[in-house]
Length: 402
Image (tube, rainbow, N blue to C red; front, top):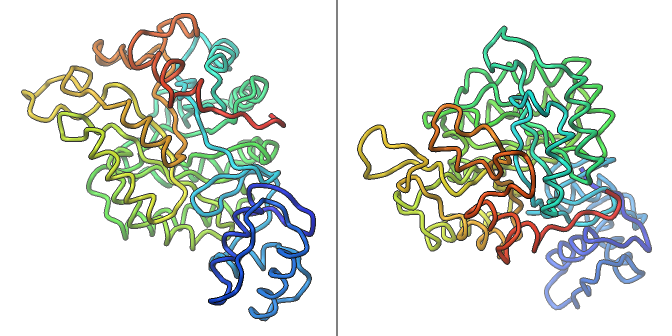
C-alpha cells in the first residue's frame, strides 16, 4: 500500500520514487536529483514512465503507476506502507522502529498498559510490540481475551506516542495453529478494532509460528493463504510475518519474502526475525553483520521483532543448561550496531516483569523488575534503552503527528 503522489508532494517516499525512476531512465539520461520534492522535472519523468508503460499519462503516482514501477501489486493506504526495505507513515515519512516488547496479555497488574506504556515512553521509544493472545493461557478453548482490552492497549500506546504493533502469541512454535490466528483476526469484534486504528497500527500475524521443520514452500503457501484471507476481510494495515524456527531463521525469510510480497494484493508486508543467536553458537558481531547484510542485499522490509542480552541456545553446554546462563548470552551490542548501520527497526525483549516465570535465571531478560523506567536493570537493558549510541534514546524518532 502506498500514498498517492502528485505535483508539489514532498516526503521520503518522493525520494524513493526519484531513486526508482533513476533506475528506469535509459543510459545517458541525466538522473533526477533525489531531494524528496515532486517538482516539474520529476513530474515530467513520471509522465515519460507512464507513457512508455502504456499507462494513463497524468503525472500522478497512484497505485497503478506504483505497481508498474515496483513490479508488484500495491494499493493506496490510510496508514503505514512499505517501499523497498523501509516503512513509511501516511504522510510519506520513513519510520525506523525503535521499541520494546510488553507481555500485556500475561500482566494481570497492568492489563491495559496504563502503568507500563508511559514508563516505556520515557526511554524515547517510538513503538511498542503488544504481546496479545486468543486465550490467556495460550491453549485452544482456554479463557478468552477481550477485544475491549485490546482496544484499551492500543489506545494507551497511542496516548503515549507509541506506534502499536499487536501480535498473537498462541501459535509460538506451532505451525498447525496458523489457522487459529486467522480465525481470531477475522472475528467481527476484532476486525472492528483493527479498522478503527488502521491509520496507525501494525499487525504481527503470529509470534514465531512454526519450529525448525518448516520449509520455504510450506511457509509461502501458508502465509499466502493467510495474507489473502486477512486482506479479503478488510484488514489493510501492514502485516508483519515472523520467521519460523521460533522466529530465528533469517535464511527462511531470505528465501520467501519476495514471493510473499508479490502475493499480497496490498504489497504491504514486513518480515521479522528474532535474534536469539548466542555467542556460544558463533554469533559474534562479525557473524551477525554478515548474516544481516545478506538479507539487506535482497532488499525486503526487515525488522528484528525480538532480541535480548540472553536467551540463546547454549551451544557446547551440558544438557539442561539455561539459555539465560552465560552460555546463552546474545551479542546485543553487535545487534544494535548492525541494525543502526542498516536502518533496521527493532524491539527489545522484554519490558517485564515475568521472564523468570518458568526459569528464574531468565528474570535478567526483564528490562525492569517493577515496570518503571527508574527500575531499569543494569547491563544490557540500560544499554539498549539509554546509554548505547545505537540504543533507543539515541536513535528513536517519533513521528510529529503521533
